[in-house]
Length: 449
Ligand SMILES: Cc1cc2nc3c(=O)[nH]c(=O)nc-3n(C[C@H](O)[C@H](O)[C@H](O)COP(=O)(O)OP(=O)(O)OC[C@H]3O[C@@H](n4cnc5c(N)ncnc54)[C@H](O)[C@@H]3O)c2cc1C
Image 1 (cartoon, protein in one colour):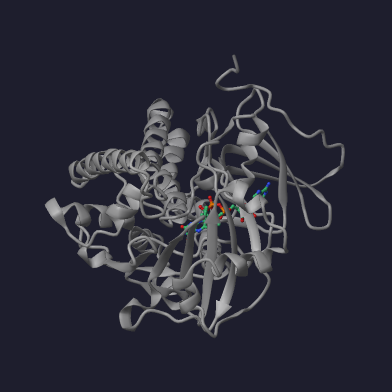
Image 2 (cartoon, rainbow, N blue to C red):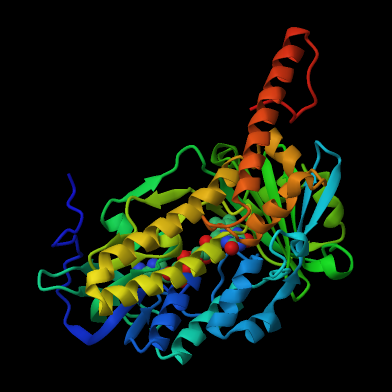
């Protein structure tokens, strides 16, 4: 059995002379939302923090739609005004289903908890740059253009990491604690062979930017739209500068059937969704499309003797409800408290790490249940319902705003939602069986699960 806290970790032997050797309290690897957030919080508490990022910001990143519960996190970080300057206000979400022949618009203002009525759509290059500059302004030492290649946890304690700078120079950091925020590169999970792919819930995405797409009128212009179609779903994310981000998320096997280049393939998928074709009439693409596999995964562990993982470095789930950046930043807030306890209250360390891990795992599990079922007919029916029976819709809106807490008052309504989902799935399955028996097909997309 693999030991919980390996003493000697696998590392890349590096015989090059060290050109820079830096010591710090906390080494953060990765300058995305997770890394920049935790670096800012810990530096503001007086820790000597070094953040190492392999790229140079601003750089492109996918993941442009944020949740209302991101907003209080921006306030705590002191970046609200800057985010509001670059962001397109997002007051709700619209679902469009060809099987229901209508659209449903939900406003975050109608959620159970009315305190978070809006969020933003952002260009991640600008958004991530603001968070990175904030980490630096709070006192973290930010090193860009440097990739960390290896990490070791020596017997005498602490962490030693080796990296390579843009000019090929070898760099070394010695820290008391390590935060892995390397996103889907999953540095530690890979090195420790702890990455577990969720083979049942894989998707792949192809996406691009358009200009001239028709937005919703008035205040709803910045709302995200989710269009279902035969092979999955599309996102329609209006950004502040008239650009609209469009992406299709499908089963990886379907994506593999692609015979053309990625851009032509995206156009062929759009052609399968008349409601989206309508919104894109007269729109043009501003650059080539990109494809990516969204393999859902989770590392076996997210904490160890001198490390934690935050954001996608620990876990990734399909982006249908735009939860990635929120989970990364919320995890960073919770992680900062765990790191502080480890550094200054060693007797509490074990408990603090356990609490951090349990809160993050619970939040991911709570939202994943809905994400994994988003293409099921019963789930589509429920999301396309405009009625607020037993205040279930308010509860769902709070969940979609980012309320994934275990203690939330919405949890009983969400249980009710699940009960209705299972009942509906059962009834749809029976209806499908009956229609097969009598030889009369059900409407496409209305089969049971
Ligand atoms: C198709 C798709 C659509 C998505 N849409 C949304 C959405 O609408 N809304 C949403 O909230 N989320 C969305 N997401 C998810 C979102 O992109 C991520 O959850 C989010 O970026 C996670 O933040 P992070 O800081 O953990 O990782 P990242 O943002 O990936 O940051 C990791 C950073 O680490 C750096 N790094 C990696 N390895 C090293 C190394 N060895 N050394 C130094 N630096 C390193 C990288 O350069 C990167 O800057 C989407 C994801 C996909 C794939």
